[in-house]
Image (cartoon, rainbow, N blue to C red; front, side, top):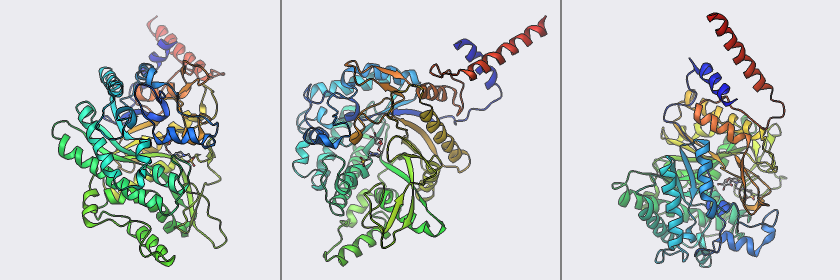
Length: 519
Ligand code: GBH
């Protein structure tokens, strides 16, 4: 069967150029707290997510925790086998700060933690897979949270020290780095929505203080890498942003849509990627005006000094974008009720953000399928910040099923990859890589284990945490190997195997034809 298919593929591919350009790289991603488990063994200390889910079981849909998760602390060899099965170029994972440095401070290195990441990195490299490492995917040491976490300006130094220590350990082998995954998730979703750890509600205040500290922390880490490591070891490093596609609800709403984009994305990109630096000017003015009107003596959005602006501006080597979904945007009317950010609105912008009823919903209440949005976002980045390399560091689809024949997920990835190709070929945007979220089902934050993003299904009822490839894994692996949007692949989970029959019949006809010719 496999032979017949590869035979067919060879014949089919003759004369057909590859869809994905040479040098375009594919990857898969996970994050430490979502997969590792082993939360309190081998010297690891608590992070804010440990503390959060232990003290507030209702914070997750199924009252679950990441205590065991996919048990990747023990099963990482199987994870690497899966990454290799897919044939991807790189594996994006994150480092658990408290596994490496249980005190948060770098005065004490946990040798077991060091060995874990060293084994992971070295084994990946031995198998020809590039490690792409995220320093921070939301798991702050609880000890630092006790001191104010991301709202204490000292967090900038804590993070910078941690970054330097990790570079010292691994920059000789890791050449692509993400400083912080989705600042929106650790500022707005904590202080504005209250859903993410540590779940402190301080809307319009805490989130803005956090934003400034995150920008500075990222910038310091980037500069440390630039000044102390880049000349010794080749490498590139950037922050990673979540983009929603904010589309104007009508022609009159283009300004509202751009404002939403500036508040939800621009605040994390303008300080780094724009020529002027600093907060997006319109957003800075709106928040300042509102603060003064409400009787504050200064803006709730803390200003940058000129020195801070200069420190942050230009701290990138590429652009890292996560994309999942989109929203329509319109100006708010007096009677509108503000929903909760990030999916509905902000109290500082008089705009309403809502999904287009035409978009298909996934099993996650926030994820509507809107593939064109990824192209629009890539264009927006290109238009605003120049023709730099863009890596899509996450893109994926959730369902609540164990189903191995995940047709919707295959369609999702195919639909988005198609838009990526259009960006490259039609719009000349320099997209250099694509990362599927996720390698496997894992602890999906507030949704616990009720939402599954995996190319591989994980059986969380089994102590072995058995991983099984879904159809999407087979599709993606075929895309990667054949470099085609519509590769030939065998889907063993298909109930009607009509397409296989078509393939077999045509191959057989072809062979018969050749035989006849030679007879
Ligand atoms: C990414 O964030 C994350 O980087 C990744 O860790 C995550 O697993 C993946 O997406 C899928 O969600 O409970 O109101 O906060 C994308 C942003 C973060 C949006 C979690 C949905 C849950 C809604 N997602 N969030 S809420």
